[in-house]
Amino acid sequence: MNITKKKILITGGAGFIGSNLCEYFLNNDNKVVCLDNFATGHKHNIDKFYSNSNFTLIEGDIRDLDTCKKAVEGADYVLHQAALGSVPRSINDPITSNDVNVSGFLNMLVASRDAKVKRFVYAASSSTYGDSKGLPKVEDVIGKPLSPYAITKYVNELYATIFSNTYGLETIGLRYFNVFGRNQDPNGAYAAVIPKFVAQFINHESPVINGDGMFSRDFTYIDNVVQMNEKALMTNNPEAINTVYNTAFGDRTTLNDLVNYLKEFLTAYDAEIANVEVIYGPNRAGDIPHSLASIDKAKNLLGYNPKYSMREGLKEAVDWYWKNLGKKE
Image 1 (cartoon, rainbow, N blue to C red):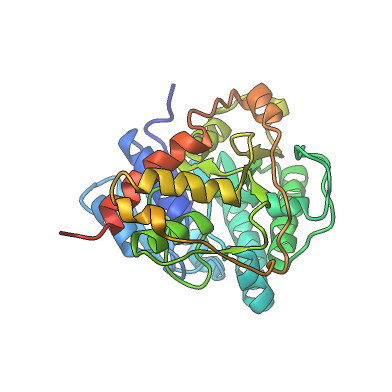
Image 2 (cartoon, rainbow, N blue to C red):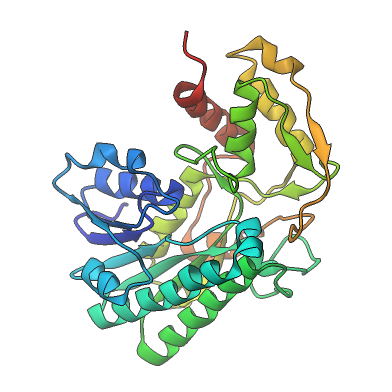
């Protein structure tokens, strides 16, 4: 069963995750409003939607309450993806990260409350687990945040709970774990590790691993994340609402293994990539050593059933990147 014939506002809809959500819900006969200021999103991610009469773009900033109110008008649901991601970015510029991720988030909550939307599903983050040592991570055990970004995402959860309890706005937070896949930007100072490494391998450049490569992550393919967003919108179980969920596959991969997988898949397109060496650098400030999610709560309460393992998703992603970034003959 899918959601159809609803009006859905997707903030950050020109970004990596947002554009995949736009595409999915448009393909299932919904009206989609995309709100984006293109600070980190890209117009090329949504170019193909302009010809669809069910798609509306509002170019604007969530830091402006009037813009948020305009965007949410008549919406059944909100999928709030807009944020300034990246731990290093927040360390370099905590004020802007806070303005967007906290003040902008609060604007969207207020606008959604006032518009009486059915449900507000938002991008939370695995960074909220902070310095908690236990693995796998379970939703009700967190530590102290290790970066300004992590603080902002935790504050989002606190605000969402207040709006649920005080105003009756249905909210669900999805703690994303290292999402990857099509439309993820390989460029820029804050590019995520997978697209960045893929682009470097394609160009026969040596990727730099922070540390010894034994840090591990619960890398999560985009299609699993899209499924989680839809499950969060669809549930009618009162127990499943006004809470947060790990959004992951439930397995972890070291950075060394990641590099080996990338080489394995990319050499199918260019045998020379096998000879590209990896450089090891210092650990990065604010990084947690290991990340692994328990997805039991999402399975039990939402019926989540991730279709793609890390390797399966990586093969799909590498194919997409080669077609979009690969050296042309």
